[in-house]
Length: 378
Image (cartoon, rainbow, N blue to C red; front, side):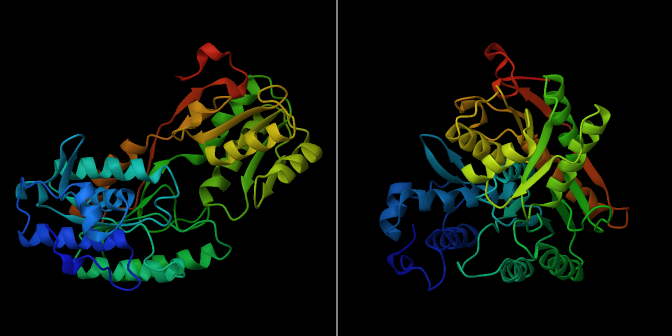
Protein backbone atom coordinates (compact mmCIF):
# COMPACT_ATOMS: atom_id res chain seq x y z
CA UNK A 1 0.00 0.00 0.00
CA UNK A 2 1.29 3.52 -0.74
CA UNK A 3 2.75 5.16 2.32
CA UNK A 4 1.92 8.56 3.73
CA UNK A 5 5.04 10.11 2.18
CA UNK A 6 3.42 9.67 -1.22
CA UNK A 7 0.16 11.39 -0.36
CA UNK A 8 1.24 14.90 -1.35
CA UNK A 9 1.58 15.25 -5.13
CA UNK A 10 4.45 17.21 -6.60
CA UNK A 11 3.74 20.78 -7.61
CA UNK A 12 2.08 20.96 -11.04
CA UNK A 13 1.29 17.22 -11.16
CA UNK A 14 -2.43 16.30 -11.15
CA UNK A 15 -3.41 14.18 -8.14
CA UNK A 16 -4.61 11.28 -10.29
CA UNK A 17 -1.20 11.10 -11.98
CA UNK A 18 0.57 11.01 -8.60
CA UNK A 19 -1.59 8.00 -7.64
CA UNK A 20 -0.97 6.43 -11.06
CA UNK A 21 2.79 6.79 -10.87
CA UNK A 22 2.96 5.53 -7.26
CA UNK A 23 0.91 2.42 -7.98
CA UNK A 24 2.68 1.76 -11.27
CA UNK A 25 6.04 1.97 -9.51
CA UNK A 26 4.88 -0.37 -6.74
CA UNK A 27 3.67 -2.91 -9.31
CA UNK A 28 6.78 -2.81 -11.49
CA UNK A 29 9.09 -2.96 -8.46
CA UNK A 30 7.24 -5.96 -7.06
CA UNK A 31 5.86 -4.23 -3.97
CA UNK A 32 2.46 -5.24 -5.34
CA UNK A 33 2.84 -8.74 -6.74
CA UNK A 34 0.82 -10.52 -9.38
CA UNK A 35 -2.61 -11.42 -8.07
CA UNK A 36 -2.44 -8.88 -5.24
CA UNK A 37 -5.54 -6.81 -4.59
CA UNK A 38 -4.75 -3.09 -4.56
CA UNK A 39 -6.17 -0.82 -1.86
CA UNK A 40 -9.83 -0.02 -2.43
CA UNK A 41 -10.97 3.22 -4.03
CA UNK A 42 -12.07 4.47 -0.62
CA UNK A 43 -8.71 3.60 0.96
CA UNK A 44 -6.76 5.30 -1.83
CA UNK A 45 -9.03 8.35 -1.57
CA UNK A 46 -8.24 8.63 2.14
CA UNK A 47 -4.49 8.15 1.61
CA UNK A 48 -4.26 10.83 -1.07
CA UNK A 49 -7.11 13.06 0.16
CA UNK A 50 -8.87 12.95 -3.20
CA UNK A 51 -12.31 12.01 -4.51
CA UNK A 52 -13.24 8.54 -5.74
CA UNK A 53 -13.48 9.93 -9.29
CA UNK A 54 -9.81 10.92 -9.11
CA UNK A 55 -8.87 7.45 -7.85
CA UNK A 56 -10.99 5.79 -10.54
CA UNK A 57 -9.21 7.78 -13.23
CA UNK A 58 -5.81 6.55 -12.02
CA UNK A 59 -7.01 2.94 -11.82
CA UNK A 60 -8.54 3.15 -15.28
CA UNK A 61 -5.20 4.25 -16.72
CA UNK A 62 -3.42 1.37 -14.96
CA UNK A 63 -5.96 -0.94 -16.57
CA UNK A 64 -5.36 0.57 -20.01
CA UNK A 65 -1.62 0.10 -19.49
CA UNK A 66 -2.33 -3.58 -18.93
CA UNK A 67 -1.02 -3.65 -15.36
CA UNK A 68 -4.23 -4.40 -13.46
CA UNK A 69 -7.62 -6.01 -13.84
CA UNK A 70 -10.61 -4.17 -12.36
CA UNK A 71 -13.39 -6.52 -11.26
CA UNK A 72 -16.81 -5.08 -10.52
CA UNK A 73 -17.77 -5.62 -6.89
CA UNK A 74 -14.42 -7.23 -6.05
CA UNK A 75 -11.59 -4.75 -6.53
CA UNK A 76 -8.47 -4.10 -8.59
CA UNK A 77 -5.88 -6.85 -8.99
CA UNK A 78 -2.33 -6.91 -10.34
CA UNK A 79 -2.13 -8.92 -13.55
CA UNK A 80 0.23 -11.89 -13.79
CA UNK A 81 3.69 -11.09 -15.12
CA UNK A 82 3.17 -13.21 -18.22
CA UNK A 83 0.32 -10.87 -19.15
CA UNK A 84 2.52 -7.81 -18.73
CA UNK A 85 5.27 -9.01 -21.06
CA UNK A 86 5.36 -7.72 -24.62
CA UNK A 87 5.40 -4.28 -26.12
CA UNK A 88 4.67 -1.02 -24.33
CA UNK A 89 2.84 1.46 -26.55
CA UNK A 90 2.35 5.18 -25.95
CA UNK A 91 -0.96 7.00 -26.48
CA UNK A 92 -0.76 10.61 -27.68
CA UNK A 93 -4.42 11.59 -27.95
CA UNK A 94 -5.27 15.25 -27.24
CA UNK A 95 -8.52 15.76 -25.34
CA UNK A 96 -8.81 12.06 -24.61
CA UNK A 97 -11.44 12.63 -21.95
CA UNK A 98 -13.37 15.19 -24.02
CA UNK A 99 -13.79 13.32 -27.31
CA UNK A 100 -16.10 10.41 -26.61
CA UNK A 101 -15.02 8.08 -29.41
CA UNK A 102 -11.46 7.76 -28.11
CA UNK A 103 -12.28 6.14 -24.77
CA UNK A 104 -13.89 3.05 -26.38
CA UNK A 105 -11.16 3.00 -29.02
CA UNK A 106 -8.58 2.83 -26.23
CA UNK A 107 -10.62 0.13 -24.49
CA UNK A 108 -10.50 -1.91 -27.69
CA UNK A 109 -6.75 -1.37 -27.88
CA UNK A 110 -6.30 -2.39 -24.24
CA UNK A 111 -8.31 -5.58 -24.75
CA UNK A 112 -6.38 -6.55 -27.87
CA UNK A 113 -3.09 -5.61 -26.23
CA UNK A 114 -3.69 -7.68 -23.11
CA UNK A 115 -4.41 -10.78 -25.17
CA UNK A 116 -0.91 -10.48 -26.62
CA UNK A 117 0.82 -9.42 -23.42
CA UNK A 118 1.16 -5.78 -24.53
CA UNK A 119 0.37 -2.68 -22.49
CA UNK A 120 -0.49 0.97 -23.11
CA UNK A 121 1.05 4.07 -21.59
CA UNK A 122 -1.76 6.58 -21.24
CA UNK A 123 -0.97 10.10 -22.39
CA UNK A 124 -4.25 11.93 -22.55
CA UNK A 125 -4.12 15.09 -20.50
CA UNK A 126 -1.75 17.95 -19.85
CA UNK A 127 0.04 18.22 -16.53
CA UNK A 128 -0.37 21.99 -16.66
CA UNK A 129 -3.62 23.76 -17.52
CA UNK A 130 -1.63 26.42 -19.40
CA UNK A 131 0.42 23.92 -21.41
CA UNK A 132 -0.01 24.32 -25.18
CA UNK A 133 -0.86 21.27 -27.35
CA UNK A 134 2.66 21.33 -28.82
CA UNK A 135 4.32 21.58 -25.40
CA UNK A 136 2.09 18.79 -24.15
CA UNK A 137 3.08 16.58 -27.08
CA UNK A 138 6.77 17.26 -26.41
CA UNK A 139 6.29 16.43 -22.72
CA UNK A 140 4.65 13.09 -23.50
CA UNK A 141 7.10 12.29 -26.29
CA UNK A 142 9.96 12.70 -23.81
CA UNK A 143 8.19 10.34 -21.42
CA UNK A 144 7.66 7.81 -24.21
CA UNK A 145 11.36 7.93 -25.07
CA UNK A 146 12.32 7.45 -21.42
CA UNK A 147 10.00 4.44 -21.16
CA UNK A 148 11.35 3.06 -24.47
CA UNK A 149 7.94 2.47 -26.00
CA UNK A 150 7.78 0.15 -29.01
CA UNK A 151 5.27 2.32 -30.86
CA UNK A 152 3.02 5.36 -30.48
CA UNK A 153 -0.67 5.74 -31.30
CA UNK A 154 -1.50 9.32 -32.25
CA UNK A 155 -4.57 11.44 -32.90
CA UNK A 156 -3.73 14.85 -34.40
CA UNK A 157 -4.72 18.05 -32.62
CA UNK A 158 -8.01 19.66 -33.64
CA UNK A 159 -10.18 22.61 -32.68
CA UNK A 160 -7.49 25.34 -32.63
CA UNK A 161 -6.80 27.97 -35.26
CA UNK A 162 -3.17 26.95 -35.82
CA UNK A 163 -3.77 23.18 -35.75
CA UNK A 164 -2.10 22.64 -39.15
CA UNK A 165 1.16 24.21 -37.94
CA UNK A 166 1.01 22.44 -34.57
CA UNK A 167 0.32 19.07 -36.18
CA UNK A 168 3.16 19.52 -38.64
CA UNK A 169 5.57 20.18 -35.77
CA UNK A 170 4.30 17.16 -33.84
CA UNK A 171 4.58 14.94 -36.92
CA UNK A 172 8.18 16.01 -37.56
CA UNK A 173 9.10 15.44 -33.92
CA UNK A 174 7.58 11.96 -33.86
CA UNK A 175 9.04 10.98 -37.23
CA UNK A 176 12.54 11.95 -36.08
CA UNK A 177 12.47 9.19 -33.45
CA UNK A 178 11.88 6.42 -36.02
CA UNK A 179 9.47 4.84 -33.54
CA UNK A 180 6.56 3.11 -35.36
CA UNK A 181 3.44 5.28 -35.43
CA UNK A 182 -0.22 4.51 -36.09
CA UNK A 183 -2.72 7.33 -36.54
CA UNK A 184 -6.20 7.03 -35.06
CA UNK A 185 -9.28 8.57 -36.70
CA UNK A 186 -7.53 11.17 -38.85
CA UNK A 187 -4.36 12.14 -40.68
CA UNK A 188 -1.93 14.94 -39.87
CA UNK A 189 -2.11 16.30 -43.42
CA UNK A 190 -5.06 17.96 -45.16
CA UNK A 191 -6.61 16.14 -48.12
CA UNK A 192 -5.31 15.13 -50.67
CA UNK A 193 -1.94 14.87 -48.93
CA UNK A 194 -1.15 12.13 -46.42
CA UNK A 195 1.47 11.48 -43.78
CA UNK A 196 3.90 8.53 -44.03
CA UNK A 197 2.09 6.71 -41.22
CA UNK A 198 -0.59 4.01 -41.07
CA UNK A 199 -4.11 5.25 -40.32
CA UNK A 200 -7.00 3.32 -38.76
CA UNK A 201 -10.50 4.80 -38.68
CA UNK A 202 -13.59 5.13 -40.86
CA UNK A 203 -14.12 6.50 -44.37
CA UNK A 204 -15.46 9.91 -43.35
CA UNK A 205 -16.44 10.95 -46.87
CA UNK A 206 -18.58 7.82 -47.18
CA UNK A 207 -20.02 8.55 -43.73
CA UNK A 208 -21.15 12.03 -44.76
CA UNK A 209 -22.68 10.62 -47.94
CA UNK A 210 -24.62 7.89 -46.14
CA UNK A 211 -26.21 10.19 -43.57
CA UNK A 212 -27.12 12.77 -46.23
CA UNK A 213 -28.52 10.10 -48.53
CA UNK A 214 -30.66 8.72 -45.72
CA UNK A 215 -32.15 12.14 -44.86
CA UNK A 216 -32.88 12.77 -48.53
CA UNK A 217 -34.58 9.39 -48.80
CA UNK A 218 -36.65 10.31 -45.74
CA UNK A 219 -37.95 13.36 -47.60
CA UNK A 220 -35.39 16.12 -47.08
CA UNK A 221 -35.41 18.25 -50.27
CA UNK A 222 -33.28 21.11 -48.89
CA UNK A 223 -30.52 19.34 -46.94
CA UNK A 224 -27.74 21.31 -45.25
CA UNK A 225 -24.47 20.44 -43.51
CA UNK A 226 -23.57 21.93 -40.11
CA UNK A 227 -20.15 21.96 -38.43
CA UNK A 228 -18.01 23.97 -36.04
CA UNK A 229 -15.23 26.16 -37.37
CA UNK A 230 -11.65 24.89 -36.84
CA UNK A 231 -12.85 21.29 -37.05
CA UNK A 232 -10.66 18.29 -37.82
CA UNK A 233 -10.01 17.17 -41.43
CA UNK A 234 -12.48 14.36 -40.78
CA UNK A 235 -15.23 16.99 -40.78
CA UNK A 236 -14.08 18.32 -44.15
CA UNK A 237 -14.30 14.76 -45.50
CA UNK A 238 -17.82 14.35 -44.11
CA UNK A 239 -18.81 17.67 -45.68
CA UNK A 240 -17.46 16.47 -49.04
CA UNK A 241 -19.54 13.31 -48.67
CA UNK A 242 -22.62 15.41 -47.97
CA UNK A 243 -21.94 17.41 -51.12
CA UNK A 244 -21.52 14.21 -53.15
CA UNK A 245 -24.93 13.00 -51.97
CA UNK A 246 -26.52 16.38 -52.67
CA UNK A 247 -25.23 16.39 -56.24
CA UNK A 248 -26.27 12.77 -56.79
CA UNK A 249 -29.84 13.67 -55.77
CA UNK A 250 -30.12 16.99 -57.60
CA UNK A 251 -29.84 19.12 -54.43
CA UNK A 252 -27.70 22.22 -53.86
CA UNK A 253 -24.25 21.04 -52.60
CA UNK A 254 -23.25 24.46 -51.28
CA UNK A 255 -25.68 24.51 -48.37
CA UNK A 256 -22.94 24.34 -45.73
CA UNK A 257 -23.11 26.32 -42.48
CA UNK A 258 -20.11 26.77 -40.14
CA UNK A 259 -20.19 28.47 -36.75
CA UNK A 260 -18.01 28.69 -33.66
CA UNK A 261 -20.79 27.67 -31.28
CA UNK A 262 -24.04 25.89 -32.10
CA UNK A 263 -26.30 27.95 -29.86
CA UNK A 264 -29.72 29.53 -30.33
CA UNK A 265 -28.27 32.41 -32.39
CA UNK A 266 -26.40 30.04 -34.69
CA UNK A 267 -29.46 27.83 -35.15
CA UNK A 268 -31.60 30.85 -35.98
CA UNK A 269 -29.12 32.10 -38.57
CA UNK A 270 -28.92 28.63 -40.10
CA UNK A 271 -32.69 28.38 -40.45
CA UNK A 272 -33.06 31.95 -41.77
CA UNK A 273 -30.30 31.67 -44.36
CA UNK A 274 -30.78 28.13 -45.66
CA UNK A 275 -34.30 27.10 -44.56
CA UNK A 276 -33.26 23.41 -44.42
CA UNK A 277 -35.69 20.54 -43.98
CA UNK A 278 -32.83 18.16 -43.22
CA UNK A 279 -29.47 18.79 -41.52
CA UNK A 280 -26.43 16.53 -41.53
CA UNK A 281 -24.34 17.39 -38.47
CA UNK A 282 -20.57 16.83 -38.50
CA UNK A 283 -20.90 14.65 -35.39
CA UNK A 284 -23.38 13.73 -32.69
CA UNK A 285 -22.16 16.40 -30.27
CA UNK A 286 -23.01 19.07 -32.85
CA UNK A 287 -26.39 17.41 -33.49
CA UNK A 288 -27.25 17.44 -29.78
CA UNK A 289 -26.40 21.15 -29.53
CA UNK A 290 -28.47 21.89 -32.63
CA UNK A 291 -31.52 19.94 -31.43
CA UNK A 292 -31.45 21.78 -28.11
CA UNK A 293 -31.17 25.16 -29.87
CA UNK A 294 -33.97 24.35 -32.31
CA UNK A 295 -36.20 23.35 -29.41
CA UNK A 296 -35.48 26.71 -27.77
CA UNK A 297 -36.60 28.38 -31.00
CA UNK A 298 -39.80 26.34 -31.11
CA UNK A 299 -38.67 24.39 -34.20
CA UNK A 300 -39.52 20.71 -34.13
CA UNK A 301 -37.42 17.64 -34.94
CA UNK A 302 -38.09 15.70 -37.19
CA UNK A 303 -40.96 17.92 -38.33
CA UNK A 304 -40.14 20.26 -39.97
CA UNK A 305 -36.39 19.52 -39.70
CA UNK A 306 -34.85 16.06 -39.93
CA UNK A 307 -31.49 15.63 -38.17
CA UNK A 308 -28.66 13.10 -38.61
CA UNK A 309 -25.30 12.77 -36.86
CA UNK A 310 -22.17 10.63 -36.91
CA UNK A 311 -20.55 8.63 -34.04
CA UNK A 312 -23.48 7.21 -32.00
CA UNK A 313 -22.34 8.61 -28.67
CA UNK A 314 -23.66 7.01 -25.50
CA UNK A 315 -26.69 9.23 -24.98
CA UNK A 316 -27.76 9.52 -28.65
CA UNK A 317 -30.58 7.02 -28.09
CA UNK A 318 -31.72 8.70 -24.85
CA UNK A 319 -32.47 12.18 -26.18
CA UNK A 320 -36.03 13.48 -26.12
CA UNK A 321 -36.00 12.78 -29.86
CA UNK A 322 -33.55 9.85 -30.31
CA UNK A 323 -30.84 10.68 -32.82
CA UNK A 324 -30.34 8.93 -36.15
CA UNK A 325 -26.59 8.51 -36.58
CA UNK A 326 -23.79 6.50 -38.12
CA UNK A 327 -22.16 4.32 -35.47
CA UNK A 328 -18.37 4.26 -35.35
CA UNK A 329 -17.04 0.76 -34.51
CA UNK A 330 -14.78 2.18 -31.80
CA UNK A 331 -13.77 -1.06 -30.07
CA UNK A 332 -13.00 -2.67 -33.42
CA UNK A 333 -10.92 0.36 -34.45
CA UNK A 334 -8.85 -0.09 -31.29
CA UNK A 335 -8.35 -3.80 -31.90
CA UNK A 336 -7.36 -3.25 -35.54
CA UNK A 337 -5.00 -0.45 -34.49
CA UNK A 338 -3.07 -2.90 -32.30
CA UNK A 339 -2.88 -5.40 -35.16
CA UNK A 340 -1.71 -2.62 -37.49
CA UNK A 341 1.01 -1.56 -35.06
CA UNK A 342 2.28 -5.11 -34.63
CA UNK A 343 2.45 -5.63 -38.40
CA UNK A 344 4.25 -2.30 -38.78
CA UNK A 345 6.85 -3.38 -36.20
CA UNK A 346 7.29 -6.70 -37.99
CA UNK A 347 7.49 -5.10 -41.45
CA UNK A 348 8.78 -1.53 -41.02
CA UNK A 349 9.39 -0.96 -44.74
CA UNK A 350 5.97 -1.80 -46.13
CA UNK A 351 3.94 1.12 -47.62
CA UNK A 352 1.76 3.20 -45.31
CA UNK A 353 -1.88 2.10 -45.25
CA UNK A 354 -5.29 3.65 -44.69
CA UNK A 355 -7.46 1.03 -42.96
CA UNK A 356 -11.15 1.94 -42.90
CA UNK A 357 -13.78 0.02 -40.94
CA UNK A 358 -17.44 -0.04 -41.92
CA UNK A 359 -20.15 1.76 -39.95
CA UNK A 360 -23.77 0.89 -39.19
CA UNK A 361 -26.52 3.43 -39.80
CA UNK A 362 -28.64 3.55 -36.65
CA UNK A 363 -32.12 4.77 -37.57
CA UNK A 364 -34.03 6.61 -34.86
CA UNK A 365 -36.77 9.24 -34.71
CA UNK A 366 -34.75 12.38 -35.52
CA UNK A 367 -34.82 11.50 -39.24
CA UNK A 368 -38.59 11.03 -39.29
CA UNK A 369 -38.59 7.29 -38.74
CA UNK A 370 -41.48 5.98 -36.59
CA UNK A 371 -40.62 5.27 -32.97
CA UNK A 372 -40.73 1.45 -33.26
CA UNK A 373 -37.61 1.68 -35.48
CA UNK A 374 -35.62 3.50 -32.81
CA UNK A 375 -32.43 1.60 -32.12
CA UNK A 376 -32.47 -0.29 -35.40
CA UNK A 377 -29.51 -0.26 -37.72
CA UNK A 378 -28.60 -1.08 -41.29
